[in-house]
Length: 340
Image (tube, rainbow, N blue to C red; front, side, top):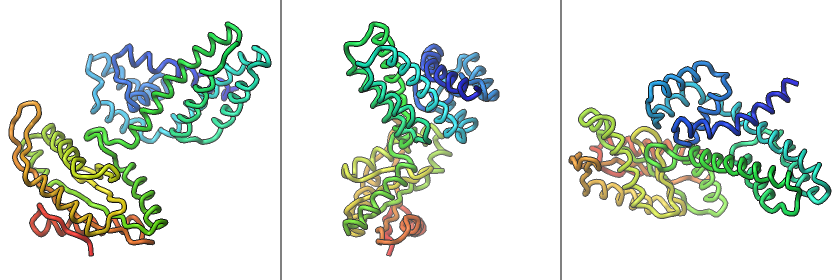
């Protein structure tokens, strides 16, 4: 009985989170959705008190505040949240299935679809798999015709509910692989891309190269101009690197002031040339603050390059690039060093 109550309540949580966020003028980002879903459940007292404090003080629910709350209260709870959302979807499907069964045989096919997906939601699915289920059921509801007025009304309500969930899961998927500060791929996306690219390189006997890029004297930038300017430099660095690579290449924020570029189908020599192109682009341009036009001066980067060796672990390839980066910095910075 407790489980049935949990499923029922989870469905209600799914339905009311977004309207509550809109009421409190909270941006509908994936992190905010996770925070407010937890807030609605009421099970995390400290999170609820913190959110109430922010809303009560009329503070903007900014990206920084959202990130801090998520890391403090929710970073370890993603699996549990997904489970509840999954169960909430099952309840929505079950409610709709009840209407379908009472509507007659003409909707039997759609009922079978709902029942199948309801069973799938009993498994431990990730965000992408749940998003796919929402998409499929949404498509099925849109093609339903010639049903009773009561069922049509219920289908319209469910289509709206699923449409909102679909948008939210799309945002969650994008957020999970995007660095929020720079807008480029994050470390998780880098790891996934490197893993896939190494499989392709081994299977097709093609080269694969990696750059690790570090902003020279970044601490000095922060100390001199402050962290807001430091963040601006990070964003401009990401943009500049993106301008120097091909569409098939992958640019990611590796961590802190360090970035990574993955060059598929590129041997070491070609990757070194690409790295030198990036280095020289930084050396010849001058950075200015967008808001004020204040000159920040020249920003340079040091770059380490390695080529993936068939059969080696990805950590070994990354370590060789990191060692090459260390040599570039030890030899004076603003230079490219390749792993041998």
